[in-house]
Amino acid sequence: MIESPDSTRNFRGDILFAFTLALGCYAAWLLRDFLVLLYVSGLFAVVLTPVVRSIAELRVGRWKPFRGWALLVLLLAVAGGLALFGFLALPPVIADLQEFAGEMPARMPVLLEKLKHIPFADQINTGEITSRVEGFVSEAATYLLLSIRSWAGKLFAVVTGIVLTIYFILEGGGAYRWFLSFFKPESRGRLDRTLQRAEGRMGKWLLGQGSLMVILGVTSTIVFVSLHMRYAYALGVLTGLLNIIPVLGAVVSLVLAVLVAALDSWGRVVGVAIFFAVYLQVENSFITPRIMRSRVGLPGLAIFVALLLGSALEGVVGALVSVPTAVLVAVLVDEYLVNKDPA
Image 1 (cartoon, rainbow, N blue to C red):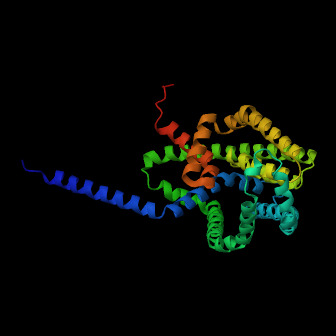
Image 2: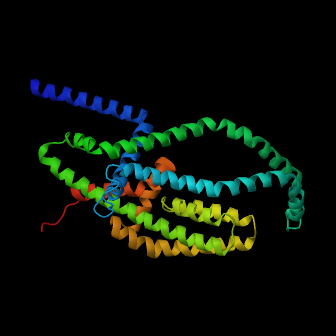
Image 3: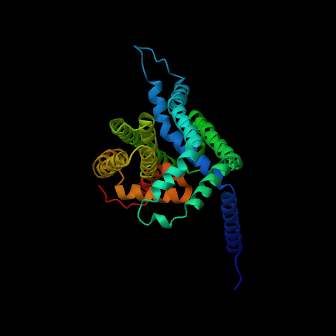
């Protein structure tokens, strides 16, 4: 049987396409860190663009003072808030750490003596504990020195992500039109409407998540102040900020609050544990479903699965962008894969 020239040409084209696809996948794997950074920056730009537009529309009478300066105002507000938080929160923490490091050699024997009165604690080798603690303290500076390189790399990635996000906000329209130009004219309009709908829902996610952050930050601050905990205001603000990461942020906040409370009394530890246990139940069963369902239109199970996948793939960064990504995927699936009944 003699093959026609058209079939031979198609066969060669299939081989070339498969080779090109494999080469592209290999290049994407090599550049995965950059591609993830690019995706996260673009996603943050999509989420923050409505905020920039809202700042630009602020009026003083008939005058719009922030028109053209909205992005700079947002950056200055974020930088000022972080600087104020560091100025108020870090000095007492550093002072207490220095005091603890200076008093630890004198306090260690007292703590070990109290430990002996706990049942079955007489079997613990206190000498080994002391040597391990002293070794940890002596090696802490060396560890910090060796980890400077990795921290510098992470800091560079964060700065690069911020710069990319700014560029996406400023020039995202041109990049978006360039992306749409790869699709046929007859399908371009449908994709444009779908992505615009996803952008609106992702912007609503930011409003919903911001509401959850404010609620947890205010309530936790009230509880920490009522318990007379040290760093109460700083812990409250940090608890609210960390709540931008669903579930994982609350867990980190709980661990930090328990550690700080343990420095003073076990009663404060119990109080913090009770507060978080009650609040997380109320938030997960009452607050979050009502806020997020009305904002992003995703069921709680979908949000939880997205969080697990994001954290498994990219850790904290993956968890941070998991819900907006789930919103984008849900909109695309609903538009292109779901068979809808005719009206």
